[in-house]
Image 1: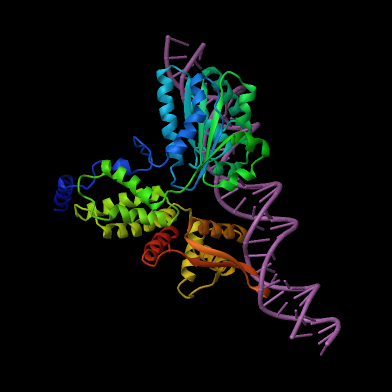
Image 2 (image 1 turned 60 degrees about the horizontal axis):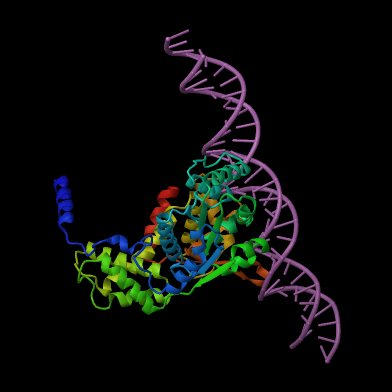
Amino acid sequence: MAERGLEMFFEAFLKKESVFFDKRALQSSYIPETILHREEQTKQIANILAPALKGDKPSNIFIYGKTGTGKTLTAKYTTQKLIGIAEREKVPLRVLYINCKLKRSADTEYRLIAQLTTELGKPVPPTGLPTEEIYKLFLRELNKQNQNYILILDEIDQLVNKTGDNVLYNLTRINEEHTESQISIIGISNDIMFIDNLDPRVRSSLSEEEIVFPPYNALQIQSILNQRAETAFNRDVLSQGVIEKCAAYAARDHGDARRALELLRVSGEVADRKNAGKITIGHIDEAEGKIDRDRIIDIVTTQPKQYHLVLYSIISLHPNRSSNIFTGEVYDIYKSLCGKTSTSILTQRRVSDIISEFDMLGIVNAKVISKGRYGRTRDISLEIPPQTLPRIKNILEESIRI
DNA sequence: GTCAATTCACATGAAAGAGACCACGGTCTAGTG
DNA sequence: CTAGACCGTGGTCTCTTTCATGTGAATTGACGA
């Protein structure tokens, strides 16, 4: 009987009318035919990169802008077009795109070079070789290929924060030593302060050219959404004001177009699930809540057990007190919790770090305060919305088995 | 009453250790012709 | 003779611990009015 019901569900699902025509147009990896409101920046990048078509080495570029301002998109778009021409003209040119933020892929010196070497067509072990060795392999491969490269390093600040600017120094120096192949670097970062903390030598060579991406305003986001919505949705599924509201939401926090697109997509999904056939403003509100919830649940479930214990300590301390949870209290609860669940106890130093990591993830709010004579500590409060709290609590209890 | 010194309870940094992974080269072993 | 199993070595990476130093305001206590 149950099986029958399931079958019917799937059949109904197939028959169901979706509001989407091509959902991919709303994903952040999608590259549209034309990029709106970035004509200036596209032109600048094109100008700088154009010499590559004549076999010269273009200047390095440093691109700065807040999240969701189209940095990655514009860089990819421009280089894609460039490659198109280069192929037609038979100019040896390649673009390598690396996102330095991706864990276990390119967030350390070794891994970045390993990734690059693999991209060049020589697979290398993900670990195990000395870093020097990997550089050698990389250089050998580079010389063998004998063509020019444009290397896009996305979220480059993450890489440098973790491993220092050694990598960049080495990369920028390659051009001086090896004449067979030239490398131009496009560094993308959303932290402008980052460039100031670099070694002066690296700084001057990395930011030969600097391009700033200003945030979009609400109107611009609107037109972007309209452009994407045209391919993404079927005709007439958007109610009056939906695009405007999405844009307004996103413009509220610093013109993040990515967020606006996500909001629109999830709104569509919500409408689909309700079989509404049309996206209304109500769906947007719902979608916003859902995005937040999903994000928090996602973050929490992917944390390791020790983190769960710490978070559970904070949560169990939370309802008794309207405010003011301190590190020491959390640590005490945490210790007894470890005893109950026979887990090894971490030092306070470490727990302190874990709490500040939760703070960065936006799950708790931890402000360092001084209580005068009674010392200095963190004032911790939960940032999880009350509706989500029971879910989180369940997840944690299951994980630490209480 | 005023003001500098003290004090608390952690925060924050740096360095180093433990243990999981991994590649590589050498050695051993069993199977094959 | 050879392929594969197995070991030791040397490397990276992440998570932790250890040790050291920093911090900011309530409290204290000396001082002077």
